[in-house]
Length: 447
Image (tube, rainbow, N blue to C red; front, side, top):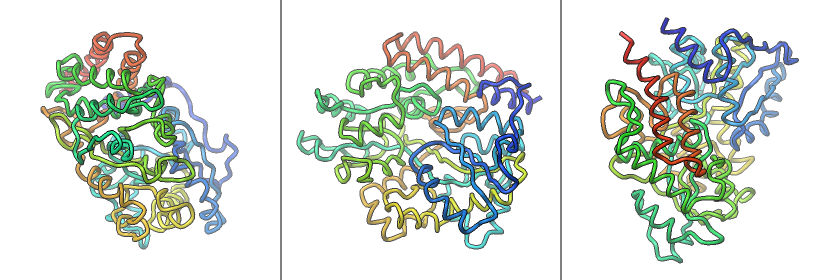
């Protein structure tokens, strides 16, 4: 019954009925030697595709077929395919939200077995917090391509001109004050995500809720989304982005904010540490060398940054796990990191996955502005204790329960509506509370 409930939750989140079928790899025109890879269309993944011919040249018996989708689309399609065991994909890009849950459900191949038998791969080189977040019962079921926490990015030149000093550990009030002072006709004070999606607006917002002393549930799974702490945090976030944020904030996610900041149209941006690959690349950014990096802003709870990794796993339904592992080990190996640095530039190296990355002289030089704060943010994240008060769940910017894909998406839609001015924060949270209560009751009823 427990497994059936989990299966129903993840498939419902993907928007499919339990009776729906999934196309097998053969129906996509793939050959027996083709490894089909489902990936999110972020910049680091685009780089991987551009270098994939190196893998195929070294492994002429394996052909690669990439299916790249936006984050929300990828989550839905990968979740449905893996849960239903359709065999559509041989490699899936998932996160530390899915990996341990899916491993428990028996949907993923144990990759520690492969890693330990691959000379020089060294799974112990992965940053410990990431390695643990992708593990189940001591084994990794996905390996990190890149890891991230969250931090504050700000224009050093603009702050200096305005006479504002940004501390290494800012408070949210200091950020709000700076945003108000730097906001102008040509420059917004700050970029913040407002786009619906549990991995979009809720990622930064949840860290704000946590540090304001809020939580989704109390220890007995009573929903807390209308508590004074949550209401204060959400009002702060919505007011900040409405008053001093980017135009069209309700439809802005990571990609839109990256463009705004990289093109010099925002004074600050609070988001993923992985954004440096865009901001410090002259090919995509007008602010190279002008950006300062500070720890995630706080109120009550310190170390408020999230912990996240885009990682690669092999569904149990794949009939080519050995070939799939060959590709995964190539894309997550130390040599791949050096390849990106040498071919595409050291600022574009997938950050936050391996400890050894931070010992490469060329990367240390390229990352001197952001490398240490990135590492400190990842190592300081506290997914096992994400809030000020005790909670029955783990995860900083998400709740590590299968229902959160659907619950988080519904709540995010309410928050986006408030950012768009379509409803008040109080009304958005009242509806969100009702959604959360339904999920909370299922846990209260469990023996």
